[in-house]
Length: 350
View 1 (cartoon, rainbow, N blue to C red):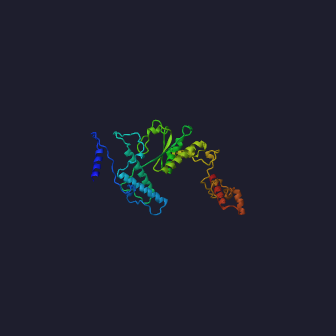
View 2: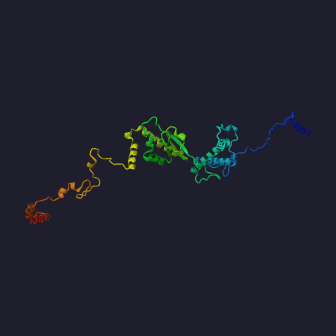
View 3: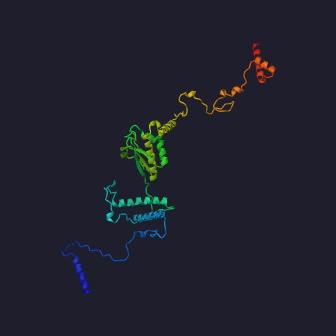
């Protein structure tokens, strides 16, 4: 016992500085030996089992992994453990950015927390579509609406003779409105030349127009809440641009339809398709909707009916009617009319 006490005194004196320096030497921390393993973060996940004891399909495994990751991120945000402890896993810091009050807005803590929040919002949206009757974790606050964006550049410099803006917009913007309705996204034309000189289109909101964006090359900006809608709108825009470039103007059916819609909107549309171009408008046969009163057929009037001559009784003179009357072949109606006319002539002479 005395030997051990002497050893402790020797160690104590050797650790203390002998030259009177006030800075003590850091003692190595002694960790108590234990047979238990290190702490596992998965053990603290609530309402989730850490062992899979039953066979599962690939969809069920993906849903389970998604739920475990959501619970893990939720606990990190709840206990404010957002910065990774491993120094080797840290990314390089970007240039500092400051707000109006002079505070830095892109610190490591804020960047890590924002990254976890974005991942959590994305996983919750996927889980809501993949898992029936899914409920978000307790205390979850839905983040701001995320917009997926993409750009389709218009080759206006390569084809200066093509009016891309007119064919994309259509008459009074109907073509681009139809593309928005078909895809579910918002398509807007941006870049140099998209706004007439002297006009200003600066507004607030998700579709806010940036002045720097207006000075760039001419392009179509596509915005939607899902990537599928963006891809569908992108395909429609690319098809319209390809049609305008590859199809000659006389054979461009898209442009012809737009001109026809514009004439209808302006009230100057004349439906003269299907008529011959040789005869004048007033010389063209107007046979649609005309029904003959004699034969009850369409395409001609009663005056031009070929059956009218067969049914019509020819006009005969009084002498012929008297001659035929003796033979018994005269029409009684024609005979009465002739007698009436003759009486009128006699009365007029008197």
